[in-house]
Length: 638
Image 1 (cartoon, rainbow, N blue to C red):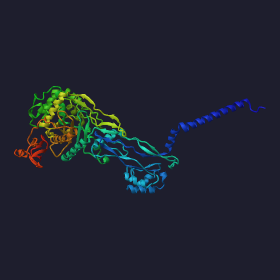
Image 2: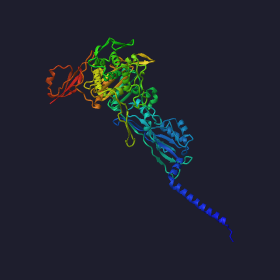
Image 3: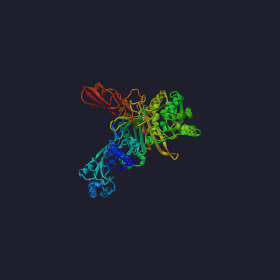
Image 4: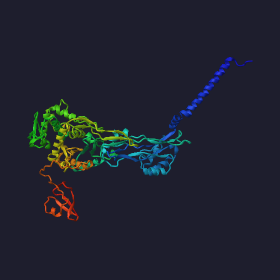
């Protein structure tokens, strides 16, 4: 007798099939979980269990053009505590306080936080390696040292207002550190400790290492050797002249590379909180905007020569000490005037009325056009944080008086880096290059070049012929004119002084000047361009010729060996004025007998060294220029 109906059999068959399919599904799922998704699911599970002790990767270094380290990192561990692994927080606080000599109560308060992993900061953040080692030797359960770093400055305050600084978590807050923070920043490594919900270590689960990545290396165009020379001179000037502030820049005029960049007063980047924000937030060569004074005359001169409105040697100008423009009396710095001059002498004497004449010959449209062509009125594109754009007259406001004052650098506002960009174009043959300070971005581990900055030529603003004439005129300024204190024997320095009265509330401040000098060498083939400005010097005559010119002369003289700038014999001879110390070019004495020397009368003192009958060496070298009261050392031998 059939006890199971046909319908029941069908149902049982379908149930059996379903059970088989369900079993197959479970098997497939298990296979997927145990094999296919194993790594992914294990990672997710570990993320629920792990506690990471950070091992900070190193922030990228900053190096100079010669790969000398400017900013690096110093190991400074930070302590971490897992409360679940040690209930005796009093003992832990005692140990930490004793080693670090910090407030025990504050440390204990940190340890008692109801979190799985306590970062003991600020008391135990960025401690010394020796302190961390001492604490680790105590082998306190639950207490760990995480690798951490602080920024280190091998050259102290050098370049501080350009470099900027980092905050407590090593993020860039100012300067290059801020501007390139994303590239310099690192991704941290860590030790992964696996624990249960209460923080107890999981058995049979090994700790793991999580890889990090170091930040990129920033290579600057800055030359530290030149930077040291520039900062030495500025620090001395601040003391000698009791100045409010000072700045300097050096540039390769043929590429736009900035070789040195300095602002004073400076500060310690490891203690930036101790100075006013106005110091660390203002990189003066790009931030400061002021009337340029006579250094701007280089632009007027270049435009006039390029447009063919002046013959420097044969055109003449009579300076009565002033000129009248629309009823306004515009004076020359020399009250009685320079009288009859050719235009080379107008430049040498920095004669304001003479430059008004050049501006009028150009006309307002041409003059304003050249000012814009040389890059004034807009940022240079240097990518230096905090750059200003300066202030120029609009075309509508550029009347006859404004045109006249602009011709000699008054009534407008420019930045030092704009002046450097423009004068570099004037002297390099007429090419306007974009200034820049970062040459390469390198991988922090492999040194692979990730990015390289090449010179960027913006425009051809004047011809090589005009550039040559201007260079000659500016060499005459140093040999015979207002820049004579920048003269150095054989180096063929050329340049222009500037003395600008400061403006406050639309009025000129009595007795408050910015004195400056922009100079380059050699005049026939410039390799280095240097600009120095001293703000409100108080213990000397406030003239660029007296204060800034000799500083630039010394910088170029000391920089010459760095850039293989050799002395030349075809230098324009310096003229003498009353008050100058007399100098002599010394001949070669090598090979002569002592008797031949002592019978001649020389204006300088001679000291003899060694024994013998013939001169074998001399100091200074032949053809050197010395003061007449200097000493020449002659060495005898056989």
